[in-house]
Length: 512
Image (cartoon, rainbow, N blue to C red; front, side, top):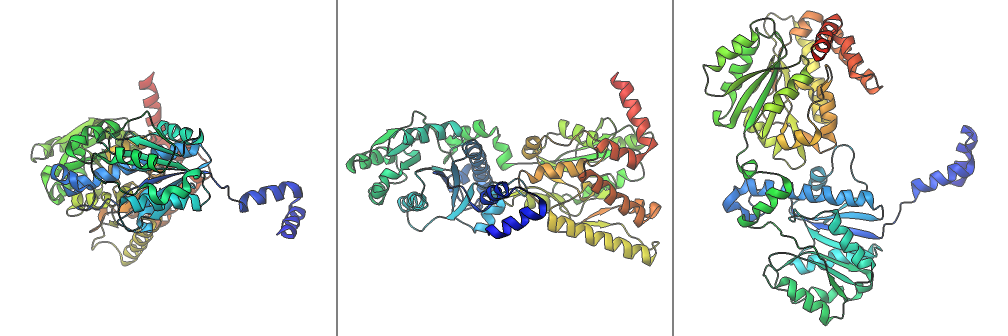
């Protein structure tokens, strides 16, 4: 390898000693001395958190498990990023490593300190024993094990636990409010006693903590108890702990409804058909909290048509005024929305049958923080065979982009949860590429799935008017320029021209 390094150095005039040092860093992985092991289960309805099913239902209990696990791992990841000598091991049950990685590893910005291990067979004692011994076999000096259903757990608890072990204790326990314990940790000095330390424990009872303390004393293990006492979430009476720590209301676990946000600007020819299709194609009107039409200052009859339509349907239809620009309009709509699920729909796009069920099914897949629909355009008999062929080609490429790269655009009808939308800061207030910026933020949180079933249908009016080369070619140029660092404002001026300049000038005048 050294000769190859020297050759590269000669070719590129790089000092050999610098190149050798950098190459060594690439091939030599740092061996961390600490590990946090988290016990969790894949959130399968009916299997996960079964004692919460009577109050939350199967789906609600599984969603609670999903949210708690993600919450815990985010907090522990903060600790690992701060303490570079610490790994994070996820010990899972109920699924495959591939599913676990999809659930807990985002599409972009993943964690190089996180590892996944299948829990061994046997009872809790056997599982704890193997997780501990596995850490010491991996030459770790300290291991701390926690469950994923302790919402109050944070980096400060990890600080206390590892400081206790590094201070000389062979074992540390974190006492739970119900008589058990939420954390157990060991230093390598106790490694030879791990085989016996979990013997004789009545797991699942209020005796667990005291029995574990007694067992450590019998084996001559020096034990210290953390000052922090926490509660796990197993029963209905524990839910306030979850609600407080995760800032979540119970209805978000059991009865989530949709807010559909539609930005409009002079859409009198399309908006009624879009609204009618939405209302007709939802599986149940009660699942739609509201439809919010965020108008950017239409000069035609768009607003009047929306208000007239609202008088004819049972679903709440609201009109709000916004600064023009889809980024501004969709952000304004989301700010007033009251649903727990958000769907952003372009005014010339029609939703498929049972869209609410298929979108929610997509979001129920662990790892999916958002989703979109398969895409199509509204071809008709008046279109030429060549135009139809072109549009089928565009459909094919668009759907491959969504499927293979998790990269939907706004006319694919992006949807997500209120929780996730707020977490990433929502839409940026920009005139162009607001959907691209949103998707990039979502990638940092997880994955963007595809709703099963029929596609959305988008108007082909732009391609009919301007042609494939101009529309698709301009879109490609705009995206490439964005990746090269051109500002969204500049790109919007390229795209909209003088029409946008007048809008920007009017907005500036209003702000003054």
